[in-house]
Length: 114
Image (cartoon, rainbow, N blue to C red):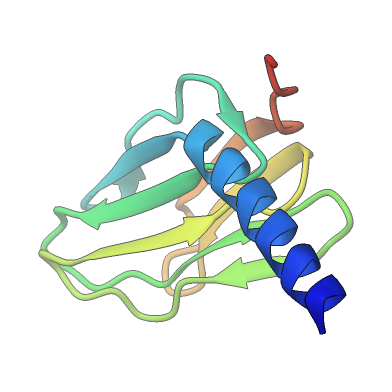
C-alpha cells in the first residue's frame, strides 16, 4: 500500500511540473476568419478559441497522425479550450465553414530546466 501512495505522490509531482510549464493561448474567430495563429505552441499548452463572430462555428484541430480534437458547436460570444496533444504540423478548420483554415506548428514539450 505504501508503494502505491509513493507512486501516486510521484505522479502528482510530475503532473504539477508539467502543468507549470504549460502556456495558455487565445485565438479569436472573426466572422469567417481565424486570427493569425502566432507564437510558440507546445504539446500540453492550452488553446482557447474566442468566438467573436456573429455566427456559430465548429472548429477542430487535425494532428499529424490524422487524429482530431473537435470543439463541437461554438455559438457567438463563447470560448472553448483544449490542450494540445501532439507535436508537428496541425490544421484548424471549421466543419460548418470549410473556408476557415489555418496551419500551425506544435512543438514538443519544453524540456525541464532543473
